[in-house]
Image (cartoon, rainbow, N blue to C red; front, side):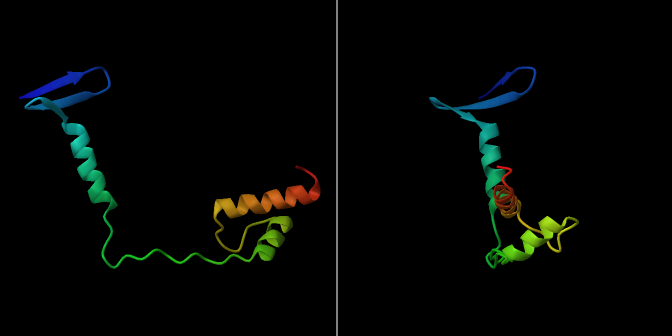
Length: 89
């Protein structure tokens, strides 16, 4: 026997299994999430690229665009170091 509860935003379907109520939406979400998170057997993470800190600092201080993509955390650390050196922070 299924029971539905709803408000203006969502409908929650509960199935009654004996004395326990089962939230069907959560079960469906967990199944979809498990499928989404599966990785192929031959999957390997990409190796992290080594970034030359001196080159990055030079490119930031010169202005313009960077020669390669830089992770945001590395870029922020470099900016903080430049600002601390300049006395901004």
